[in-house]
Amino acid sequence: MSKKRASDQDRSSSSTKKQMVAPGKALDSVLAGTIQAAQGPEDFRIITGTYERILYGINANWTDDKKLKLAPVFIVPAHTGLIRTVGVGGQFLASGSTDEIIRLYNIKKRKEYGFLGGHHQGDINDVQFFGKYMLTASGDHHLGLWRVKDWEFLKTLKGHKGAVHSVAIHPTGKIALSVASDRTLILWNLMTAKKASVTKLQGEGIKVRWNTKGDQYSVMMDRKINIFNVSDGKIAKSLEHRSKLHDFCYYTLDDKEYILSGHEDKTIRVWETSTGECVNEIESHPNRIKAIDVIRHNEQDILVSASSDGSIKCWAGDKLLDKTWEALGEYNTKSRITCMALHLGFDASTDE
Image 1 (cartoon, rainbow, N blue to C red):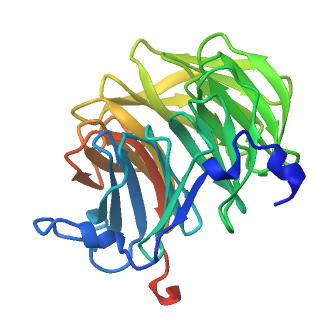
Image 2 (cartoon, one colour):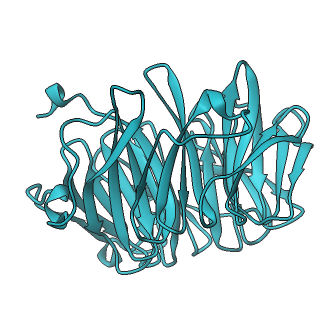
Image 3 (cartoon, helix red, strand yellow):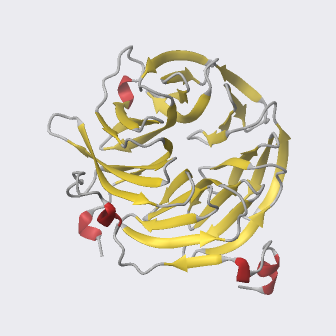
């Protein structure tokens, strides 16, 4: 690493922990004997982090009757603090925690890979991959830029004056947005790893997301989601509800764009982004919904929701406007889920 690059870092390399463990420790080796493990390759996988510091890998496979069978493939005591975030990039899984450590796993080979620590001095609140890089957001007010090839820490991105809650990378991979407790939204130029602009928000942004086209982005607050136009940076629509928000994602159905939100009142709500109207709501879990996302497999969109009671449910994306929903599959981790990530299955024939 060059002297110039080293000077960009807040702490010396001597204070940085970067340990890659021997590639022999299998993730599936820690499954309890009383739990029936998933068999064979997965169609897609659901990764959840929990308050109990445990990382779950749940394989999802289609059955002959067009349902989904969910079964655990690994259950890992990953951290010494609660897990705040999980992110997947290619064959790698990263988890971040209140213990200020980023744990790394090769999920294709189902092997523990090591951990990264020392650059953040605060909770790891978000982890996002883009191309050959990884971006982390922390309670220490900073973002971290990492190179995935050798897990080299490249730069600290400074600009916020409060804990950074969430980061979203544009579909082009050239820019990113972050929100923090300082009630600001920062636009970052990822080509230069520098701050491009700062926008003062009306409240504290908890999560930020880009839409699929990249011409709009949304900021989730406690009980409101503001949709912004990229062209002028102004609020296009506001989605408000009295029940506290925990997560949201974009979804397109029949060429129409929607936002799906998970709430404290156990309900998933479907919002039409063009009008700002809530067009459907389903009480889908016994407890608050902590995470929600959509994955596409075999030309079918699947909505996955996870609750703080430990339950994970899969729903047909093309049925989201129906007044009643039937889960395609479900599994209960019996742990308090805090975060979730989804990824498509790996072709077993390509395993090294």
